[in-house]
Each structure stands twice: as structure tokens, then as C-alpha cells.
Length: 210
Image 1 (cartoon, rainbow, N blue to C red):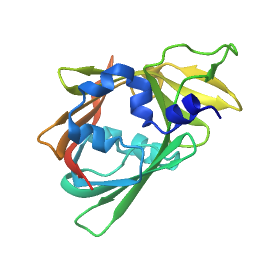
Image 2: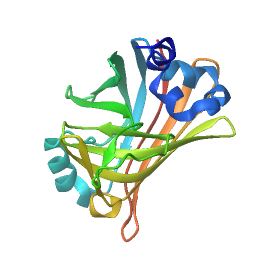
Image 3: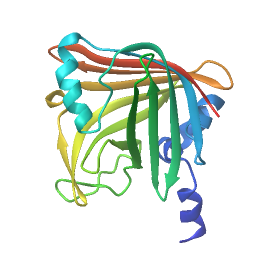
């Protein structure tokens, strides 16, 4: 590995995706995406229509999302690197004593191959995998100091190939907005909106990275 490759490998995944825009992120968000092991602590509010309960319970079997509502529920997010992959482990502690774990891993899409076998060149994209075979490709950008995610499409991973699945076939369009509240604390807002059925899922909260 060359010095340049080593330097790139040791950058946070988000910094690799954002490039020069990384410098526009406030300190609280840079800490949230740092390369070294870290833990976010805070509270989450989870909202969705009652009719979504069976579908979300099915998605939980696939490792995706959370199938229990709650307001200001204590939560932690542990993050660590394994090579070029960043692992996330979310632990959500409900008042009834139940804890839901939501695990995923993130990869920078540089060099990822689409279904055609060709590399996708957009360097501002990441994929979050909720299982070894299913993930969501998202584009990231910084707007007025806020980090914005936009869902591109879901992916089914077939070896080294990625089969794109339109968002509306699964749950709808994904958006995430993260903004710093001060030097240490940040707020996040994750939403899924379907073009026909409106908002189907939302979780939002405030966190501090330790």
C-alpha cells in the first residue's frame, strides 16, 4: 500500500465520500463520523402508522429498522472500523425493559460494481448494509453546515455485483438530516416517504459522541 493509499484508508468513510465538503461539517458531526472507535449516546423518538407494524416486523427479520414506537427512548450507537468497513451497533432501550439492537455496516462506494459489472463513479455515495445481501445506497452532501442524505436505491448484493432495487418497491424515499446543536451534541432526523402513501417511518433524536 502506498503512502497515499494508506492516508486515504485512514480517513473516515464520510470524509472520503464528502471530499472537500468534509471541512464544512461542524465539530460535533466530524466527531460522529471519526475513524476511531466511538459511541454516541442520546435519545430517539420512533414514529410510524399502526398499519406499518406487520411490515416493520417482517423487515426486522431481515435486520432492518425498528418495529417498536417510543418517545425519547435512551439509545447508544457503537461504531468501529474493520478494514475499509465501518460497523454500527445501535441499542435502543425501551421503558418496558426491551432492548432492540439494529446492526449495520457502511462502505464507501468507490470501486463498487453495479449489475452491469461497471463501476459507479459517483464519489459522494455510501452504502449501508443491514445484512450481507441487502443495503441502501445514499448520496451525501453538506448544506449550510448540515449533513444531508438522499436515498438513491436499495441494493441486493450478489457476490461482487450490486442489483439496484427502486426505493418505492421497498419502503419509499430515504432522507436523513443531521445538524450540530453545539460543539459536542447533534440532532438527526431519518424519514421514509412513499410517493403514494406518504411518510411511513421516522426516527429522530439528539446525541453526543463520546
